[in-house]
View 1 (tube, rainbow, N blue to C red):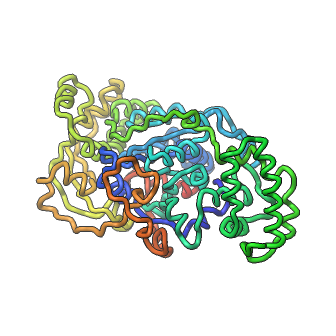
View 2: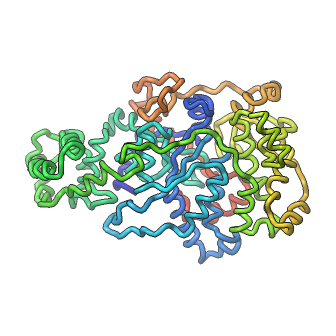
View 3: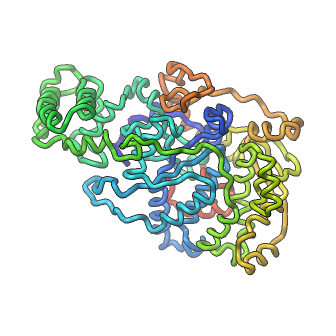
Length: 532
């Protein structure tokens, strides 16, 4: 999505991290916002559409019948459960009514997605923040990131950098990459010798090679556009003009700008191109580039367009477990099928354990809630004992790289909360299921801070501290308590990890979203969502 082949061009700047490693280091350990979390903006419309598309293309293989009801929503549940188990506060944003009506020459559906209301309700019940943007979710997230209101944007739309994002986490290939994600920062992209791309230069590449809103200059690929962006000031001048000129002034400017572009293509006066492109110069005709398209790129409609600022919450919110259970009964019939406790134990309860350890305990509120028979899991989980210290999450085959503890948890309070609002029939079926303790893997820093004495007999090796990714970006939260690193310290070759590192670290299998339970059955059969 976005500018064709730009991800490939940016590949040398990539940082390879596991989502667990990134969220623990940049969220819990750095604690820039005083909440122990990393605030992650998520393009909800993208995830919604992909889940729907994946499920639709599996109907011919019988997967829907085997997986149960509402497969798209099940996929979204497992994804949400993965984020629930990490020190991340998701801010999930959806496209709004004022988004562009045409993309890549095709009309865009403006009606709300059929599953939007259900998905948003799930997110709210899980304690995530979610809302509908005025325009495109991608532009909204990018602007929030640029203002430091969120730490990173989870997407695969490279236009995020064009809209102002400073840190983008590319959505993983679930089976191939496992917990590993590719992290791109604007600083690394600007500094790396193979890219040297500023926002103005990315803008020029979009104008010339095309993107979501125009086809660009016919015949101009990303290689030629990149050469012109580095060897001339065409990008910087156009970028400034769109920001500063009125419509009349911009039209006059574009006439002269196009003459300069033709001259660069024909004569190559600045030696920006490897060879002259006279045929391409003939395609620079009247009407190119479209002022409307230029303004869509640099002045997208967002909540910040009128000067207001959305209130973004970085504090952990306690999930409403009973409400999540009612939601799952409504869409999957897990309660009346007698499987809800098994599903929640394997996928939901562990995340609530982790989040309850991140969130400081308000003893008075917890006691009051207990005696009022409200949400019993507002207390910290009843940890029976620590099994062992281990790299996680997941087995060694997934090449985990974060130390944590496998602990045994007593499930009574979780069972009570899960069944509390279900029908009598569903509660009876749930209570008939065997009661058994469950095991949760918890990142070492989180458990150690909450229960230091509990882990005294389970020392973990000291891991090498990698340079902070977020503190090297302009998008870090104001008033950061961490010491920002100099951009010169950003890894090998002036930005990103070594190019071979990503290939070596990416596991051959794994599932980024969700523990190794029934979700593996779904993902191992859903070949079409490997690029999610």
